[in-house]
Image (cartoon, rainbow, N blue to C red; front, side, top):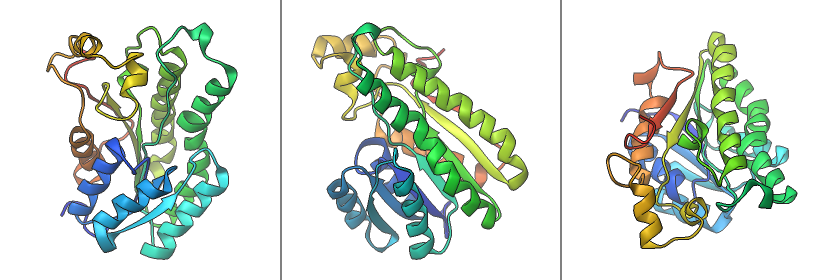
Length: 248
């Protein structure tokens, strides 16, 4: 019960890493706002979790949706202790010259601007509560980028740096800010990361991961649990690699 009586918001929690985090957080005693662009997926996860969770259809790129998300957490559960910005998008693995402006803008809105929008409401709620923990899902792509995902890689590098900057500025308010850096995972975005999903391409990607597999939702959930718990109350500004040795 490492998150007993804690209240968390997790974006992108309707599937993949976010769903794994929501499941683990509730198992450890937290109440969770399951936020996702896919409202049906959010509702499915929240229903599975029972009374400790509520579902919200949220576009993290919308300032209004971010405000409503924080208001819902306070209305239903009374406060906000933890915020996990897990929602993200990528472009298909391709030449940087082939990514159109609309996709570039969407990556910026979801992977970068969402943190700006959320902070406007998350930070005041946490200051009111005496502190809290903010966690963003970044990527090994933000630390050791490879060709084919230039603009996605750049957005995740931005997230890592933004979290470090926030960690320093918000430390006097007892708000810790960290990021997670997974390697490619078994999620809906995997095919886009690889360009196409074939056994041969999967083997190629796995070959650069020393532990020999893709990341799983449980890997991210376990790491997230530690970083947002009181066990990590002296850990801030960290970009934790959860990547099977990929960045070594």
